[in-house]
Image 1 (cartoon, rainbow, N blue to C red):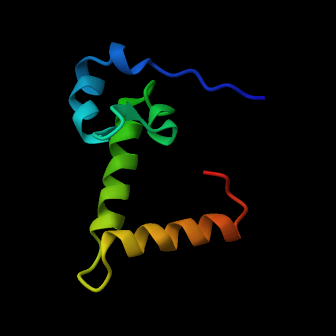
Image 2 (cartoon, helix red, strand yellow):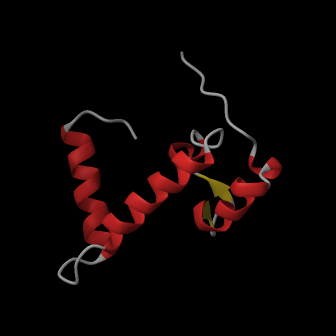
Length: 82
C-alpha cells in the first residue's frame, strides 16, 4: 500500500500554521487525510481549500448538506473511496 508523507498536525508552523484553523475539524480536532496530503505543499493546500470552500458556498439554492450529499453520490458512482 502506498504511503504519502505528511507533516504531523502538531508540527504545522509558518504557512501551514496559518491554514490549520481553516482545515482542522473542530469536533474531532484533526485534519482530514485529503487535506493532510497537501501538508508538504502549503500553496497546494490553500488552492484545494479555496476550491472546496467555493464549491461548498455555491449557490443559495442548495444547502451545504445537500452539496455534500451530491459529492458523496458522485464519489460512490465513480468508485472513489474517499
